[in-house]
Image (cartoon, rainbow, N blue to C red; front, top):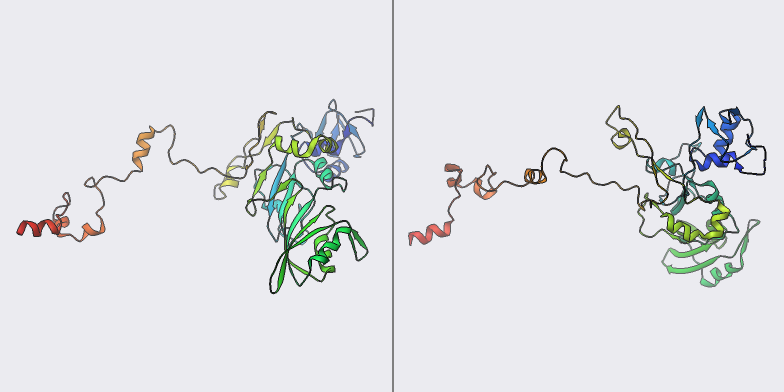
Length: 354
């Protein structure tokens, strides 16, 4: 076991970085005696480990660390930003595509708040982006019932205190006024609990719809509701910058583990399918920006014949070659008398009589 407690990283952080669980879950597993280091069970998460230490969970070796990844998710209304809800409400993690890795959210969005939510497999990155010192701008589009002036919104630039809570500088713009409500663009940097709703309530407004459209340099854009898209590694590295990446302890060189859904997840009506093994990508491979999209299967089967044969299989047969008669031909007496020939047009018959 590691002798110098000031070297390496906390064991819970190492377990979380491996994509096995969250730090909180790792601490619970350690307390339950499920984790061993160098063959000895440990009872406390207050332990630093290095790459030389051998960590095992339930007797199985801990997998290697995964690459730091970030996903953009368009959260719909009615989903709770948590892994499990005591009230039994649906959660975002239950709605995510099954092939995604274990993810944690960067901050939270309320039950009735929709829009951009950042998800990552790296707890260190999530904490770094949530720090007040990071001060990434969060921009919202708000529809609220009531009346407000731009002068009232400009007063928020110096901050405001609501119910004893101090909120920092706020950028707010009155975009549109309607008979019964207004549309406002609301930008904050702290992201305190229900900050937008509380500040607007302080101004006499009731929020009817709240949409987060950006978080730092990442935009919601045209991302469809309920869809998740991965930020490419090279883009994530540039947007974080060297300083923030160091604070987060981000690892951009580790492999990516792609978990494919098994046959029962893709086709619930099928039974007895075996789960696919995770596939590790090399450090230089670029992840796809839209991992959640499924490709449409080809109609041409491989290995059973040439493509020309398969193409002909889906072509409509020519007229006279066992083709079904058209609606005009079915009522023709000539068609009924001689199925192999086409009826003559009436124009030709009149011309022949003349």
